[in-house]
Length: 326
Image 1 (cartoon, one colour):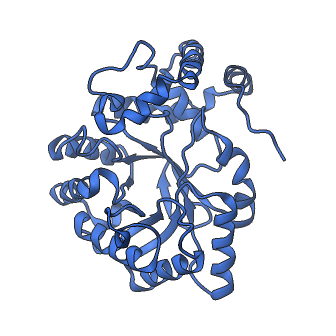
Image 2: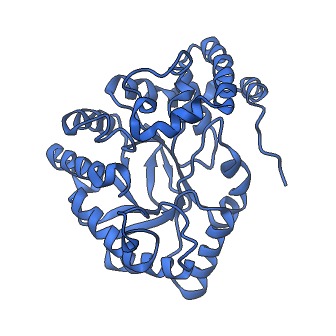
């Protein structure tokens, strides 16, 4: 396993990390989650991603139980949580100072930890001033409850506002952003955030590198039983797959399979290596549901060098979605 700096921070995260969205609780119980987390940890993965919204907190409970049962030393792994959707009441949502504090305390309790390595603002909250959010995060840093804080799916101008406010008031600035990034979703990483990489050295922990499984090719002939798109709570993913946009993506996937076959790798490995080839990516979050999938995904780091200029050009000719500069 190779390790990359989280932006300009000194923290080094494994190129591939492991996340619990959809998988924990919905697809994996505690015993199955224990097998996948142990496999990931033994393979060198040191970052495990979570959020208060994942299975309404149950995902964090499972991860906390697994970490405890495995007896992992606290100085050998990195754990994150995210705050925004903590419940249905108005005091349980958003990025106001109260919910940020309550959300952090609740996450620590569920994860059975004394502190979080990374704490993300899960979405922008346009009802709360950015300064209030930053001050709340700064307090948590000073209390030792979190080490680094960041954003997830924030627009660049909102992130820039956060940096400027932090510098103005002498508060802890954000260290990282967690956007969706894959062959079908590129604008933030390849256009919108470029200035932030240059000026702030912002770290990036990307989610959905396989476009919710579409870039594995498993949906080319329909929705397999037990896949995330077959789950009632994730019908929105299936609806997207069955839309006109989804049909166009599946046609591109079938052409990408041929590129992967020529290289002697799976489409999933090609897609993960493609993400890792972007120098601004700190880590790619995997969501494998079993050790076989994990093993396949882990091998993708070996294939980055296969993506020559010629192969990247061939992929680009299939995708035809490179963000325009300017």
